[in-house]
Structures are given as structure tokens and as C-alpha cells.
Image 1 (cartoon, rainbow, N blue to C red):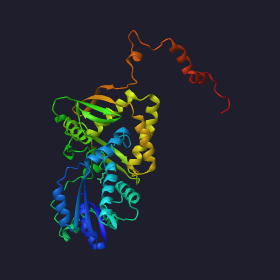
Image 2: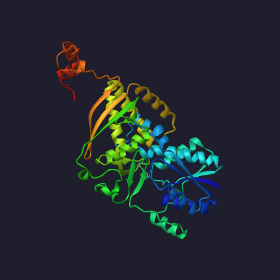
Image 3: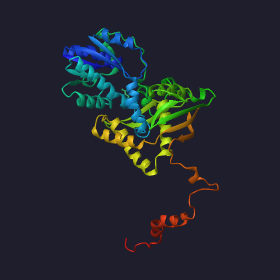
Image 4: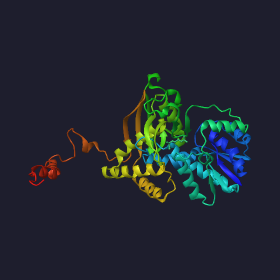
Length: 397
Ligand code: ARG
């Protein structure tokens, strides 16, 4: 049997290699997809081969991740349970599709991944793989095997694997859009995460006493320039992770409902994501009418939940994305934001085709709004409430 293994280089996927060989007599081909996790990919390749892989593929998917996954997330104001910008959830279907590509090219019979049975990631991988290549068997060694971390380390020792990689006490999943930090003392929801857990975001108390003012330009809802310079979305995200992070902005800490029914305490850092989503939402308020904003909020909630639960390739996503794209026709303009010691504040916005009109809104002389018409409008507006208040209480009951 030939197996393509989605390989991160961490403990779970590394011990999966000898396990697949032992249990299935498999030839293992490892696939590492770069979605912005900033790892030493040469080291990862060597680790895979020395653990017994017969081949290794490295795929740089950073731009594709930004253009085809992060971009729709910005348009959708994607935040699961109003907090989590969905970094891991977005990257999984991309990683799965790259591993499927390799599996088909390399004539594999199965795909393996390192997901446990307790998380959301298995749903995202399994659903994507089944949609794209239903003929392939799916093997999830960690889920099947049910080993603790210590048992995994013991197995790795027995198999003579070099476990030279720096082990953090946290479980980390990183990509361009968010960096998730789990386990260790974070499992106590009362305890604040230590700043050493973060890579981009520094303690606001230690941040330089200097306001960073940034300007983000959007075209049809997508960021196209930062501080007046045209850039790819990937570059914009990379720059903002650094800029916003060094002011101390970008931490998320919430109790999250996993699809499998577990509540978990999740800590993320996502300085670029939070900055871009804040700016995008602000520009929408300048350019979409109130009814569209109201309805879009419902679409956004469903969009985020679908992505979170692993339904990236579901036909409903196409329909939601079509609505969202239509809604963005006038979301073109710029937003200026101040980043300072842990907070981000909108300073101003300007749109090419705004619905905001100072001529209508102004309190100064010369407003084109017909104030006198307000009298009749206001009288009728409260009719239902006023009539309800005059009703006598029912004698029965
Ligand atoms: N709770 C987040 C999600 O479900 C992040 C999960 C991080 N995954 C991981 N393998 N550490 O999308």
C-alpha cells in the first residue's frame, strides 16, 4: 500500500510514519504544505525521510491560501462565534486538497493525517478528501491508536526516531491568518495566557510608546494596498502581523464550541486578521445599505459555521460566496487605523461610492434632509407601541 501523509513535522505526524509502515506495510510519502507556518522546511524533510518516508513533497501554498481562502474570509467578515478568524479551519481544506493531488499523481491507495478524534480538524480533512477522491482510504493513526503524548514519545524512542525538535509545552497550529495555542496551563480557563506563548503579539505594557497609523485600501471588499503601496494579499497579511503584533494588538481568548460537542478554551494571536476584518467591516458600513448589512450578518454567521465545521466544499458555500461577492461591488475605498498599546481604533474611512452623505447627515445649515417630514414619520413610527400601551389589561387570567 502507498500512503500520502499530510506531514507537519510535529510529533504526531512523525510517529505516524513508522506506525503506517508497521501496521500496513505502507510506503509512506510525506507532503508538507506551507501556509505561512514559518518552519525550517529542510529540517522537516530530513525528519520525514529519517523516520522512514520513501518520498517527500514540499508545496508552497502561501499565495493560494491568501487569495483563495483568506480573501473570501475577509469578504465574509469570517469570525466563528464572533471571535475566531478561522485560520486553522481555512487551511485544512487547502492542505487536504494538496495532499490529494500528490496521492493521485503518485498512485497512492490512501491518505493519512495526524488528526485526533477530539477535534474539528478530522472533519475538515475527511470531508475534503472524500469529496475530492472518494476512492482513497483515509487513515488517521493518532485517532485510531489513541496514544497519550508520553506513549508517543516512548514509541518514537523504540523506533529510534530522533526527537530533536524543540518541544513547546503548548500545541500550536500556525499559518498566515492565525496562530492557535492550546494545551498546558491554558486548559485552565481562569489562567491568563503568558506572553511567551505568542510570537507576534508582545505585552502591550512593553510595547513602544508609539502609535502606528496604517492605511488599508480595499477593492470590492479585498485589501489591495497597505500604506499607499500595492501589495499581494499575502504580503499585506505578513506585514500587518508584524506591525500590529509589535503594538500588542491581536490576541483572542475565548471558550469555543467544537463541532464534536466539546467546549474548549482557545487562545489565538491573529494581529493581521483582526486588523483587516475590523477595517473591512467599517468600510462596509460606509458603502452597504442597512438592509444588506442586516442580511449579510446572517450569511456571515452561517459562512463561518460552515467553514469551521469542515464544509468548505459544500454547495451552500458557493451560494453564500455568490451573495457575498455581489454585496461587495461598492466596497472600495480606504480605512485608516491607529494601533497603540494593544488596541486598534478606526481613525477614518473614505469610499469611492459611499452611501454616507454629509449633505444628508449634517446638523449644520444646508442639509438636504427634509426635517419637517420627520414629524409625520415619527408619529406613525411608534403607532404599534403607543396603541399597545393604551390597551386595558384583560380581566380573565
Ligand atoms: N480551535 C481551532 C479550530 O478548530 C484551532 C485548532 C488548532 N488545531 C490544532 N491541531 N492544534 O480551528
